[in-house]
Length: 400
Ligand SMILES: Cc1cc2nc3c(=O)[nH]c(=O)nc-3n(C[C@H](O)[C@H](O)[C@H](O)COP(=O)(O)OP(=O)(O)OC[C@H]3O[C@@H](n4cnc5c(N)ncnc54)[C@H](O)[C@@H]3O)c2cc1C
Image (tube, rainbow, N blue to C red; front, side, top):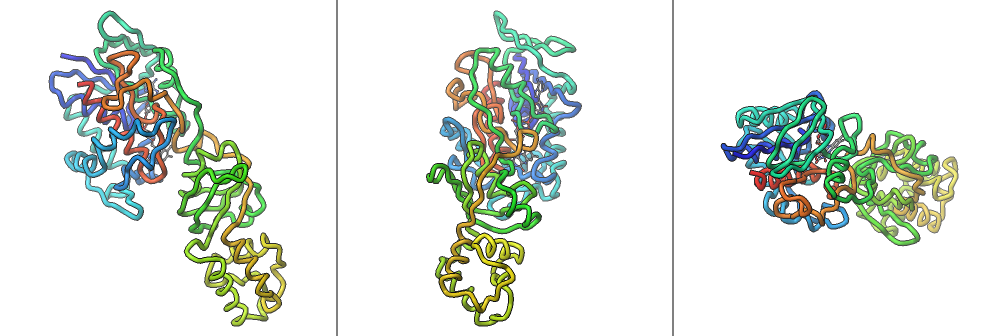
């Protein structure tokens, strides 16, 4: 009989526990520092839990060596994970962009089936127990919490990352693994709003628009993303922005194209049509029928034209300049939101020190790590939970 101790009862830890418990002789103990398991899971996807993405493949993952995730993603692709969840009784639906949610539209359903399965598998769960220290013994390990010491043959560190402090994001996993001789890369808040010079976002607060957004630094394109942009008091948010945020910490400039399906010439032609239809109207409505009215107004101003001027007075050159601005609206980056509000941590434990096929430490056999504590993070859209499930399943299965 082996004793498998899992530190952290989040997405990856619960999956690792279930997988380790598939071997009936194993005694599986799950230690969770918060009062309940899966607290962060309940908050995912705005309470709906975007648990995977049918397009989960390596291009959606980041880190110093994202290829580390390849094996786990191939071993447990989305359809395999969904079959597994279906076997636990969870019914899911796929929505736009391959995002998968529970049919119930509530994250509670995902946690419910996991908890019922953990119970049925005989996994012991100790909540309110924070792992403080791990000692290596002649055979196995001693896992110390404030309450008790637990001997372990196999140890799985699934403590998550620093993101989402209010939901339990802490540094514990990094510290426990560092104390065992592991190293970590720099941590950066990812999937967060990006702060910019405030004038334009403030005037557009609450407006949502589809855009292709490019991040430039020193005149070089660093990253690009397409999707919804939401304007907020201090900058921009929304899925398209989240995916750029891991690269925004060092500053730069966002260039937003709100009419990416049209060329500048096509946009200018549409504005010329508006000039013919409404020559006596104000410039502020020149984008009527094309863009959100407040966004249209902001573009006109950013292009250097008075909103109160007459559309009929705009020349073809003027219209071209306005059209160009709608496709190249620029915002200087001033920072990003903090770890507290981040959905994921970019950076983490150096994956070169772990085996990609098992998640076992190369430095300390018998120790495994999975989920966000490792230096792998995914795009917005279910990719991070997919990594948590896939890596947790690998670690738990290897641990058995
Ligand atoms: C608001 C929000 C929304 C999100 N939405 C989505 C989404 O819709 N789709 C998606 O794919 N991803 C989403 N994510 C990201 C996703 O939730 C995480 O990447 C994922 O939960 C990571 O799983 P994990 O098991 O590694 O860590 P976690 O789920 O964070 O679990 C780690 C657990 O370990 C516990 N722990 C930490 N230290 C100790 C210790 N010393 N002793 C015992 N226990 C410890 C913690 O309390 C926690 O319960 C979201 C994140 C946030 C914050």
